[in-house]
Amino acid sequence: KTKEERDQLGAFGLTLLCSQVVNLVFEAISVLKGNSRLSFVRLLSTLIRLDVQFHSESAFALKDLMNRTWAAQSKTQEYSTFFQSLLELMLVVERVEVERLEEE
Image (cartoon, rainbow, N blue to C red):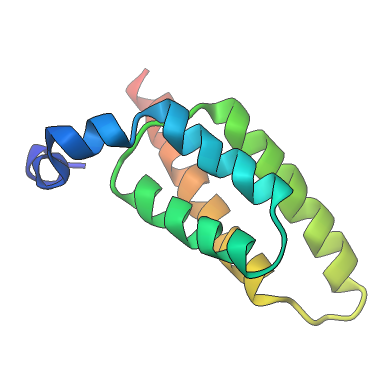
């Protein structure tokens, strides 16, 4: 993100959305069910687009959940809104992780 985009979130927002809080959102997705879980997926997708920090280890659990969900739903070829949102989230997470590697 550009400096201007980061500044839009502001210092308070970045403090409030520290990596520990964002990682809790990752964990919530793994344990919640139903609409709450879908809401957290959408929230996390928005947060990551705002360039908040997160631990790569947190993403591994969601990748596993995505793979297990795909395996279960691919049998019927009917994919839930949750799976579609999770897939979109994981694409964003993957892009962020690739950018991190390129910066190193």
